[in-house]
Length: 138
Image (cartoon, rainbow, N blue to C red; front, top):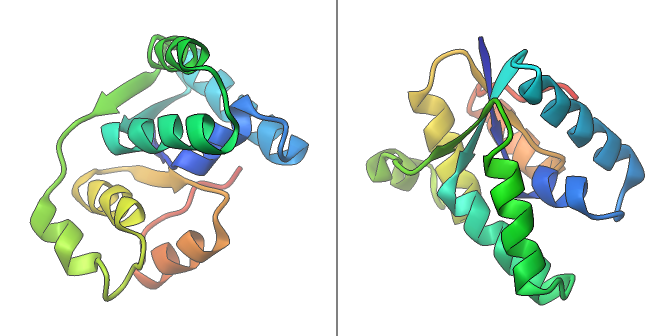
């Protein structure tokens, strides 16, 4: 089964109306996971960033954020990752990738097999390409 590591912006795009095209593409990704056509891997750091963005930028109530996270993590085909090889992260950040959270996701991808990264962030996509890491095609 194909594994897709999700970036924070893909998750935020799914639950907000900031970009309807991205929202639709993310919805298709989650539908494929629910049908067990693929597996979504979500690092706990993505959950932390997701909470911060919804709380600080979108002013979503904390109870609603909690509900969104619980629903997402209970979706069939979604798996939470807690581990990361910090040495791999530090080899990537900041020399090859300026965002520490992005470096965590890239490090997770490096250690995973048959895995790509779902992101709408063009700068991150370019960094992944330079590292020869696969980007999920929405």
